Image (cartoon, rainbow, N blue to C red):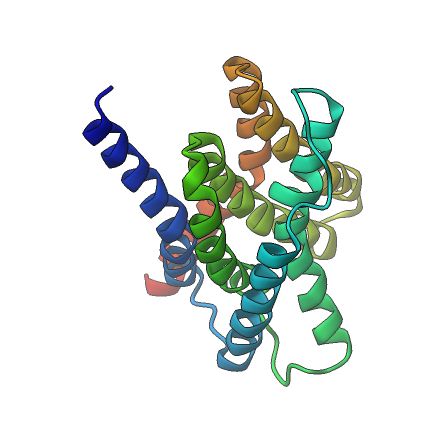
Length: 218
C-alpha cells in the first residue's frame, strides 16, 4: 500500500477510535431516554483525569510476545480495567449519595470513556494498529453496556436468572480481553468468536431498549 493510502487508513482508524464512544453514547441516550446532567459532569471530569493519568503513567503490565503477558496487558491496560473502573466509580458515588437522582450507569460509563478515548487516540495513532484503534473501543462499549445489563437481570428477574447473569458479568470482560489477545496474535477466527461472545449482552440490551422505546412512543 502506498504511503498516501496508509495515511488515509490511519486517519479512518483514528477517527473511529475518537468518535465511536461519543456516537454510541448519543445512540444509547436516544433509545433509552436516560439523562442526568450532574452525573454526566462527574463522568466527564473523572474520565478526563483517568485518561490523563493513564497517559502519563503508561502501561502497568509489561507485555511481550503473544502469551499470557499480552492477555494480562489487555485486562489491565487496554480493554477491561479502563471500561470497568467507571462502572465501579458510578456505584461508589451512588452509595455515598453524591447523586441526588438515579444515574444511568451505562450513560455514566460511556461519558467517562469519551475523554479516555480521545487521549488514547492521540497515544495509539502512532502504532497504526487496527486492533487497538478499532477493536478496543467496541470492546469497551461491550463491557460498559453488557455488565450493567447483566446486573439489571439479577435485580429485576427471577431467581433462575441469577446464575446466568453472574456468568455473563464474569464472562464479558474475559471474552473481551481474549478477543483483543487473539486478534493481536493474528488468530482472527478465535478473536471473532470471543468478540461476539463479549458483545452479545450489549446487543441484547440494545434490542430490549429499542422495544421499550417503541412502547414509550406508541
